[in-house]
Image (cartoon, rainbow, N blue to C red; front, side, top):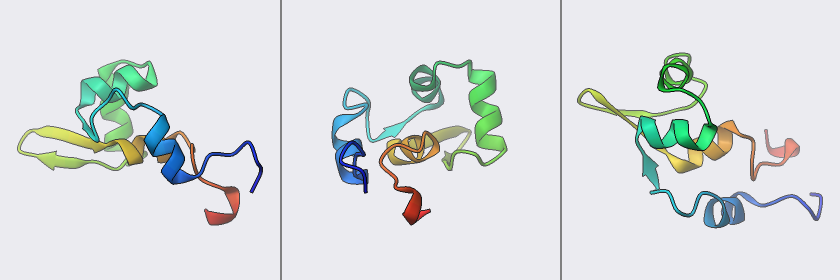
Length: 77
């Protein structure tokens, strides 16, 4: 692993620390810098894994980091 690469644990601990461990759609879209329409499309296309609670979506922060490929080595994928 490259010395400039964050481990999954470090990425989770350091990045997006002001957000909760489980985000709602608005928070996820704020992190990604996109619209909620785009956010719902990412969830529908299963590009980001989520949990559906009633009519609401809950997105674990770890899944957003995985989508962004932060904290993952190429060997582990």
